[in-house]
Length: 84
Length: 411
Image (spheres, rainbow over the protein chains, first blue to last red):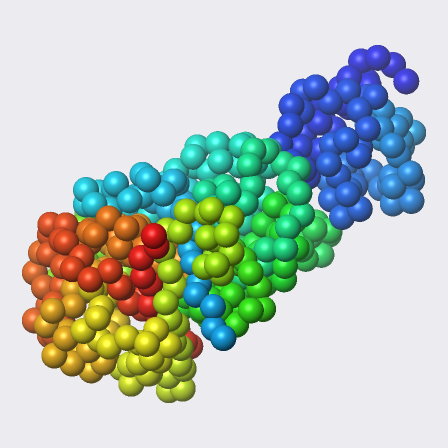
């Protein structure tokens, strides 16, 4: 996991999270340690995140894996595992 | 025993105001909000005008609620609901809010139209893969009432009434009965519609009921001999209805009263109105209010500026009011903020309540040449004193649904 790759994925992921969110917040402040729960996602809206992540990065994720993630950094890790 | 129904909060978001004071001032000053549509490419359409709510204003309203835009009708509904609930003293400041047993009963004509159109576009482009998981909850018509219930933590029942252009008036009627008959102490009622999208605006374009007047400000002309159709608008209107005694008990400012409600179905034609059906709803409303036609100060008309509506509505008003129709002023507001479909009854009921509060009727914008076939007493081009503080609010929808409110003063 290289630093540049993480930050590039983070920038794209912020966009995806913002587009799926209902709540308004400072999306530029979203960091790898930010928890998914603190962003206001619930069991429904997280499905949109999963869908949009797959669209944005062109990969297929297992819903079970995504539901287990607790932080933005963990989603980035999952994306990198899948070759993003 | 029936309880009196107080109105303790008002909220509006439409082309002439996204707050109640601006809305009221623009009405009295005769300032309309119809213009060339900015949010929609109308190059392939016959009609390119409408009454839009300023996008920055909606964004700012949502930001105050810490929300991102989701669907136009939901967004407009949330912004207007926040103002109504705040004015009623039921919420203060930003979320999270404490749960409270308030019901949400709203009207909508096109529901979450934007979400429907987006979903269909993606489906046709990419098949089922194009559909986001949240398409179901976004496309539910009750996403408007549910979104408001969830955001403000209102734990009474939430649902929407769908009856085309009568939706909000039917919803307020339902809410009125809930409070009057003791099924709820407080109900947030009203309506929301936002349908300036290629599909929904396109189907109205093809129905051929919209004005093709090239001058937007003069296009919507209810009861004018030179009218050539209606002009559409987007918007939301919200009213907090609560039992009079409860409102008094908690020291709320009572801004008006829902004195009566009547309804009927034409049972005749999907789009052509029936004077008999409309008259039945008006008579039922007067009976429910326990008043005579001569007690009315004004009728806030459905007044769509289509020939079919204006002729039929003036006949039904004349039939119900009889000789009193020579005195009772007829006011029509759609020339200001367009025909907002399922929200129109709520936005116009708010206009009527503000008129009662001020003792003033706004001018009938664009009524330059009153149609001699419309045998009612129309408000002219200047604001007029409201002689008696009771206003009948008419709404008539495709499908033959008729809803009529009688609104009165607060204290």
